[in-house]
Amino acid sequence: MDVLQIERRGAAAWLWLNRPDLRNALNDLVLNSISNSLQVLEKDPACRVVVLAGRGQAFCAGGDLSRMEQAATATKAKSKREASRFAKLLYRMHTYPKPLIARVHGPAFAGGMGLVAACDLVVAAEEAEFCLPEVRIGLVPAMISPYIVRAMGEQQARRYVLTGERLAAREALRIGFVHECVAAAELDARVEKFASQLAQAGPQALARSKKLLAKVAQAAISPALAAHTAGVLADVRAGAEAREGIRSFLEKRKPGWN
Image 1: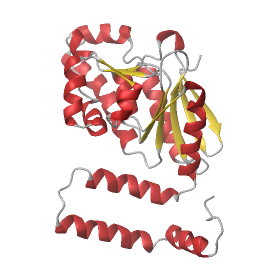
Image 2: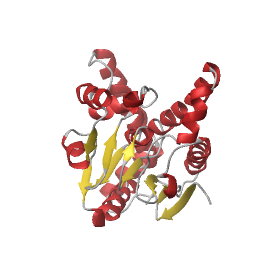
Image 3: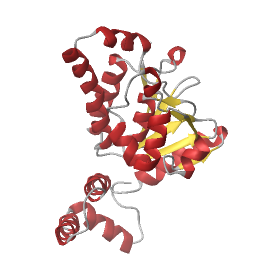
Image 4: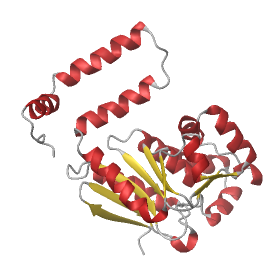
């Protein structure tokens, strides 16, 4: 059985975590499958959006218990190598040039919550739950922490990292970790609507916008930042995609990338 299934829905590629009997727990095979799929889809012009979803009752319960047991007896060097694999995947997702949507229908715990935080948009069913239980078993949510903090803010992250309490989907929406919270029956339709909206945008514009957001989110507002943003717009305006987009708008037609 494939631990990751790829389903094409129009311009979107849906990546389904497929270990339902293990609540889609993460192991090396799952991490490598996600990474390899992202690499292939990045080069596919027909794929404009990637959706990350989970089969079964859970989105992702975090690390595989057998993997955690092995890590407990591994050398420090080996443990760091294995942890680095997950850290690299999260960074890859965060900097991926195409939009990533997390479709969360059930529990997203520990590393699963980290996968969600590394995506650009999060759509959750009302039944979905999030949790960072690491401290309760003497661990630390290390690799996922940068993305958790960026997704919900430092003050809220302090609460959920330190207490390990569960975060309901509606509360996750209120604090900004989730973008949309809908009834389970409406989940796919809402994700598909987001995917359709994203696919209407210029692919290069989306990639540049993601890169720009990553820079300005942590930068001080300054003359240097102003100059940088002006330079970005000047570069984009000189490109073929922007010229086509403006021309199609004036001519009241769809741009060439649609």
